[in-house]
Amino acid sequence: MLDPVLIFRGKLQACATRSKQHDATELRWLESAYWSALRNQRVQFGLEYVGMAMRRYPELAGLFARIGVDVPAARAQTQRLDPELRRVMEPGGVQEGLLAPPGSGFGALGGREEPYAYS
Image 1 (cartoon, rainbow, N blue to C red):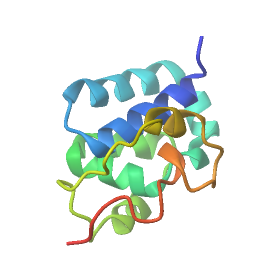
Image 2 (image 1 turned 180 degrees about the vertical axis):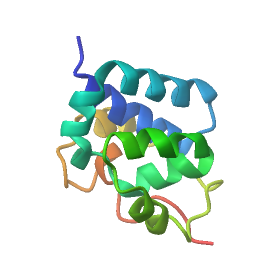
Image 3 (image 1 turned 120 degrees about the vertical axis):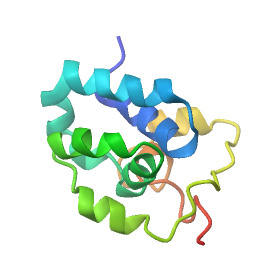
C-alpha cells in the first residue's frame, strides 16, 4: 500500500490544478482516515498548492486547518494567482508530484518556480 501522505500530496496537486470534485472528496476521506499521519507530515504540503486547492474548493480550508497547515499563509501565497490558469502537465509530472523530495522545487511539495500565471 502507498503511504497515505504520498497519496494526499498527489490529490492535493490534483485539487490545485484541476476541477474534479472527486479529488476534494478523496482529500476529505484521507484526512478522516489518516489525520495523525497527515498532521505529523504537514510541512510536506506546499502552501502554493494548498492555497490553489482552497481557491477551487473553499470548503477544504477547515481540513487544512485541522491538519495544522497555515491557512492564512497559504491564502496569501496564492492571492495574486489566477486559479483558471493551470500548470501544463508535462510527461512524468504525476510521478514528480508523488515522488519528489521535500524542498526540491518539483511536484506537489512546492511546485516549479512559477507554476501559475499571475493576474
